[in-house]
Length: 404
Image (cartoon, rainbow, N blue to C red):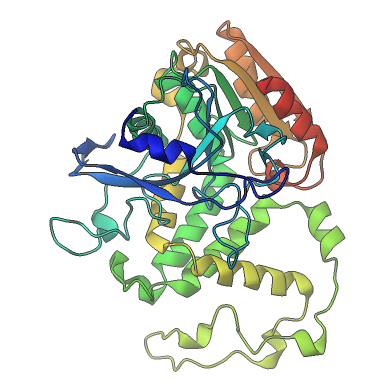
């Protein structure tokens, strides 16, 4: 046992089905790390959480890989005063689909992130200032290689499974390719082996919203400031791609915002703070205040996002998504999966128009053509790309069956 073993035994559940209070930990790598583009950091930190216990054989570990806007906090609560559960709390816990009575579950905020892991907002020890856009370009493979260093530090000798959706699914696939004998099962949901032009286009519009915000200042801005308007717009637009027309219509339709609930003009994205050369900033006329509930919802999403996410991290991570292309990197998708040893389950969702079912199905078919053990499931939902995050007994049964 080493010092890191204390991290493996810290969590207890407060009630059946819940992992209870959890505490984030930091893995600090003190040796240089070289990114895929050749740039090097003198060291890095990954913030992570664990749930359950590592068994004596150290072979019951499950790695959870998060999506673009996610982080390490995927289950439990941080304190009695901060009872917001982790983003996959419905899936992870005692007796749940990912059962912490059986498995030791770990999730780390990715390199390039902004929730405790080293990223553009971190201080460069060589200058004493935030890295900003001097931070090395990040790839999905970089994320996976730093996660492997974390697992090594914990003495984990193999992964029972790697599980993730969306960008998390990309990491799962990369795990199977990069460390074929280390991971035994791959479960990738609502993902793709390479983004289509539409997904890249949405990411680019989001990046331009940030870059064209005068407060971006070429990537150098104070921690409490920066391109908040641009980042909020990027989040609003991206969030639309995570939903579906049917789910939005069912939840909002054309419902008007009640008069007493209408926010002040431009509440979530105060465009009156923006200045343009030769134009005096003014508040928009009342006709452009929030009128529909869906507008209020999107503004809320934008506002909450800028309070927890760094704009430069958004730029870096969306570019990592765009550049992820397993077929191009290996000559073909079949070649990419040639060394995979893990049993694999790929799950697509019928209403996902960001990474649609045919992109998920293509992964499973390529694995089959490469002679691998793979299953494909396509769940009929009208909840859009975010279906993998939402309550779904059918999905829970799939996950539980695959793991057991």
